[in-house]
Structure formats: structure tokens, C-alpha cells
Length: 510
Image 1 (spheres, one colour):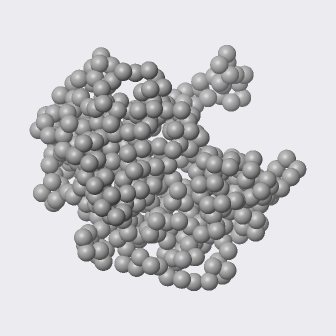
Image 2: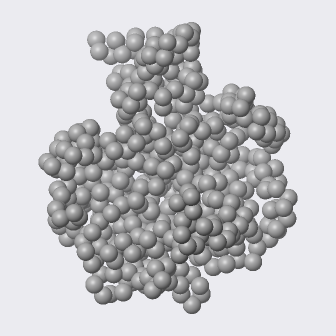
Image 3: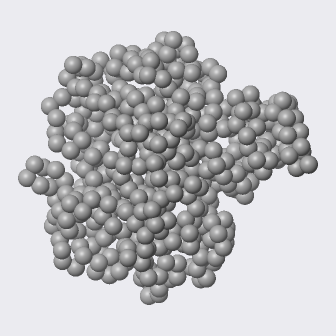
């Protein structure tokens, strides 16, 4: 009877309400997941009623959702919407392609600390969170014939002033080494050569050799120069946990965290910095991040009574057992793709005189500025290279080579409406005035007016932004999925015996 109701209900939905590209995946969902998928429809109806908007039925159906209003909902409705979306992403957008999905058991009591290479972090899987994992969000769909269509170095080349300094003959795109996955549908994949950065490896390194170079072996402290900046070796390479893809801003943060580590050694004082808040400034997102950490019961309740209930009531931090949804903890290929945020780098690095009196805006006076457009390129080992690199072409090539889905396919996989025309990428009336009409024309020429060929990175950069967001909505939903896949340092080990909070004269529970 239940199966009959499910089939009848879903059949009616598929033919009347759902965007055609989503019909196949919804037909395979449980009736509960299908209902969650339709939460958007309900929220749209409530929001339109709340806003006294009179639009036709098609405009508030989830499958035709082009208004983009979820972020304007009242906070509680927005949280329910994001919770429903996160559940769907966890169920349908995480694929375990490793060779031993069940993991290897060990005695957690033997490793009450973070190991240098990230092993033994998950009590149910020795290798979770380490290097050389094969994990993806979205099923592969690219074919080899699409690797160079359009040619990332010819059609998507940088402006002449930049391209002239990094001619194609001066550098080579080395292929990523592929490995068998043991997965029947996806036979090969690329392995991660670094542990997820939020496990502390950007400070401590991802192997014992690197860690030994960083430690002073006195009072548990890490090496840092007397002026509070990173030390450098004889080759001029910074002594830090990870030296790749660095610049002055990253080095400054690494130095800051090293000083914080050393302060912890001295005073058992823990502080955290969350720069993601600066990327996603909306009431719903701020509430969502706090709920993810503290649960619906909130911070005050958790500080007083500790972790109570599961992830919904008490948050993901402090759970007795991690919920990885059948996929070991790690960062995924798509997360790497959407986290390419070189476009957020400033054009200039401003130097200010901290010894002078602040001006009217309370900022120290400007002492100079350093252009960031033509920095010295470096190889993967952080050594300077004589030739420039076309970063955009390289990153587009990397996504294609690793068979990361293109923009529209990613949108479909995330249950987002794909674009049907180039103007869907931007707010047409506003953006044309800013000169983006020529950008749209260029995209038409580069991709032969085929929106299905649009590369993920290009689409993310061109996509119109939600007010308060520094990243695209498409990228955000990958963030939403990965936010709960935390290291067990912050889940089952986030409690007394592993951590200690000392500040303002009192100790708090976890």
C-alpha cells in the first residue's frame, strides 16, 4: 500500500510540478526525500503570500524557481529550507569511490591526539581524512574529447598584457596521475595529495617529516621569527605546514595561528577565527552556521549543559559518533573546484603605518601599496619559476582533466535550475549597464553559443551573487554539504580530556 501511494504521489508530482531534468533522480528517492525536495515549493508559496506578491502558479513551483528568494525568507523558514537541502545533498551528492569503504578499525584510545598525517582520526576508519583519498560529489560525465573544447589556452586566454608574459610554449600542463577506484561505475580517479586544510595541516603539516621541521621541541611550540612572521629556509621557502598556493595574506594567517598555538602552550588559551562569515553575510547564513556548530538548543545551553541530543539539537560538534553518510571524512573534488577564489584576491596589498595616529576612519594612514597582478609564479614546491602561468587556463584544464562536471551539470546534480541562456548568468538589466553585455557575447563566441559547454569555474565567476555573498549560490551549496563533514577533532573529541577552554576566569564545558 505504501509503495502504491509513493508511486502514485511521485507520478503526479513528476508530471505536474517538477523540472524535467530532476524527474529521474526524484523517481528513485524515498517518499520522505521527495517531500523534502518539494519544501522549496512550500517556502515559495509562503514567501509570496508573506510579500503579498501576485504571481502565477508556475512562478512559485520549485521546479520553475527563477526568483531566487530562499535567502530572503524569515530566518526560521530559511533554516528549514537549508536543512532539507543539506539532507538531500548528503543522500545524493556524496559518492564513496575508495577501495575499502568499510574502513579499518583500531583502538582509538591509542591515539588521543591529532597524528601528523591525519590517520586514526576516525575511530571507525583509520584512513579517513588522510591523503590519497578518492571522493567526489557529483558523478562524472565529461568525455576525453571534451578536454580541449573549447581550448582553455587559446579561447580562454588571459588579456594580451598578461598572456604575452606566459606564452603556452613556456610551461606545460602536467597530467594528474589517475588510480583505479574499485568502483564499477567510475573506474579511475585522482587522489588528493594533501589532507583537508581545516584539520590543522596548513599549520602543522601533513606528514611527520614536515612537522619535525616546524617544531622547536621545547614546550610544544612551533618555530616563528622574532618579528612575528614565518621563518624561511635557505631556499627562501616559508617554514609552515603548507607552502603551496600561498601569498602574503595566507602567510600572515599562518603566522597568526602559529602565535596562537604558542600562546596556547603558554596559557592554555583557545581562540578561533572564522573568515567564512565574511564570505556569507546574511541572517539565515549566520544563524545556520551557529546552528551547525551549537544545534537548535544554542550556545548558552551547550555551554551550560554540554552536548545534548544529536546533530540537530546539539550541533555536529561533540557528537558521540560521526555521521559521514557512508563516505569517509575528506574534502571532495568539487569542493576544490568551487573553492578556487583567486578572483577574491585584492588588486593591491595596502601597507599602513601602524605607528602613526589613525585617520578619521580609524585606519592607520596608507604608507604604500603593492600591486598583486604580476606576482612571481611558483612551482608546487613553492620555489620561484622564471615563467608566468595562465592560472585561469590551468584551473579550467584541471577540472576537465579530472572529469569534474561542467556548470549546468553541477547545477542539475545539486537540484538547482540550470541556465537555458547566457543572460541567466547575470541580472540582465543591471549587468549590461556595467559592461557585462560584452562578456555574454564573448561567452557565446567561446562556447559556440552552447550553455552546456560552460566550464564550472567560468560559470561560478560569472554567476550573479546573492546580496551579502562573495561567492555564487552554486558554490554555496557545495559549502553547505561539506560544512558538516568535519574532522573528529571537532566532533567526538571536542570535549574535556581533549580540549580545554580557559578565559575570563572560568572553564566551560563542551
